[in-house]
Structure formats: structure tokens, C-alpha cells
Amino acid sequence: MEDMIDLLVIGGGTAGIVGAKTAARLGARTVLIEQHRTGGDCLWTGCVPSKTILSAAGRAALIREAAGLEPDFDEVRARIRATITTIEPDDSPEALERAGVTVLHGTARFIAPGVAEIPSGTGILSGTGILGSAEIAGAAGVAGRGADAAQRIRFRQALVVTGSAPAVPTIPGLDAAGYVTSETVWDLTALPPRLLVIGGGPIACELGQAFARLGSHVTVLARAGLLPKEDPDAAALVQASLERDGVTVLLDDEPTRVHLSSGSSHSRDSSPSPDRSDSTDSTDSTDSTR
Image 1 (cartoon, rainbow, N blue to C red):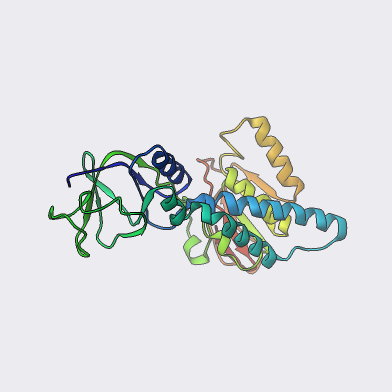
Image 2: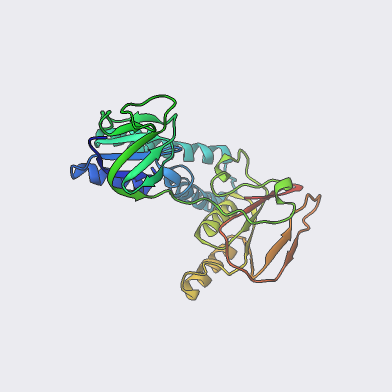
């Protein structure tokens, strides 16, 4: 390892992409490592799909009020996919390559100051040869990229922007009933007739309002209140808006179990506890959590 890169970016979401492109633009030799798809949750499961469904749901509510027409959920899903497809090229490995960034697909761990190890099997998604034999060595210290050897990268600075994942609450019966999260809700192929959203944060409010406007009967269960980190007056305005859209908002309640039912029964208690941004989807006779 005679040479080293200037910046190692771990995580290919919005922060990682902006950081890597900016560094490369300033002349830094930059490598970005992403274990899934570049673009992160903003592109695939966050900002882009959520704002698209909010826009579509708002229009659907106006059309329903004006003409009594119901939205086509398949068309809404198609619109979300089209929006992602339009934006994705800007966040792709190819776009990063054009900006001078090498993109690796895999994970990384720090093994010494200024040294990261990349497991075997990591592949280059793009790049123009920044990581030659001078910058990467096998685990045994031999320069090269053996297929079975872990690789090591020497770097001057590292940017760790790995993001987060939905926190699924521990509720008896939840796994058996089935649920979706803010990452997997986009895989739904039909509009759920009933949706229980567990959490009162921004994501919970967004999805609750969107699905209510699309035609679902939505209940938001917010154990620490709606938008607990925001000004109470602002949270009250959001709650009033949700309720105008037909959302039932239950505050300071905590679910105690989820069960399959032929009716609308559910169990909860009133013990206040920290808020979550998870949501639970209940469709027909199945209570399923998001």
C-alpha cells in the first residue's frame, strides 16, 4: 500500500453522494462504499416516493370531493416508479463515476487508524482505476485483489453516513399478523382498506394522510403525541389537518398485542412511552404492521 485515497465514504445515500461528489470536484481521490443501491432511502423509500404519493393523494382528494371519483392505486404506484426512474440516474454509480468517484458494492470496517477492510466479494460498480494495486492490498499484505482475500483501503479522511432503519416495535402477535415498514410499504400492490400507523413522527403523519386521502380508513397511534419534537401549536395544526382528512388520531396509547380478527377489534393501553415512526397496516381481517 504505497499510496492512499483522500476520502473514504461509507454509505451511498444523499449525504454520501453529495459528500463524495463535492470531494471529487475539489480534487480529492474519493471512494464510496454502498451495500445496497446508491441513492439511499431518500430515492428509494423516503423523500421521493413519499412526496410523490402525497402529491397524488392530494389530487385524489380534490377529485373525489369534486366528482366522487376514486383513485386508481395502480396508477399511483406507477407514478411513484416513474418519478424514481426519472431521478435515479443522478444518484447512480455511473453519475458518481462521471464525477470522479469510485463506487464499491459491499461493506467496510475500520481495522486501524486510516485503514478500512473490505470483505472479499466486494466489487467495483464504477470508477476509473483510482483503486489500483498501490491503494488496495490483500489481507495478507500482498498488493492485488484476490477473489478470496479481504481488501484494505488506506485513507486520509472517512465520512460515515450509513443512515438508519425503521424501528419495529415488540408487540405480541405482530410477526404472525404481518406488517410493513416505511421501507416496505411501497411494495403494497393494493390499497389497504384499513391502516393502523404506529408512531407520530413526520413519516407517520405523511403516510397516514396520504393513505387516508387515497381512501384507506387510517388510525394513527402516537404514544408520545404527534410530532413531539415540534412546537405544540404546529403539532395541533397537523392533527387538525389529519382529522379533516378522516384520520383517527389516538394519543398517549400503546398497543399491547396484534391479532387476526374478522372484525375491527384491537387491544391497547394508555401507558405513555417514547414515540416511534413505525406504522401498522391492517387490511380486511388481518392486522398487519408497517
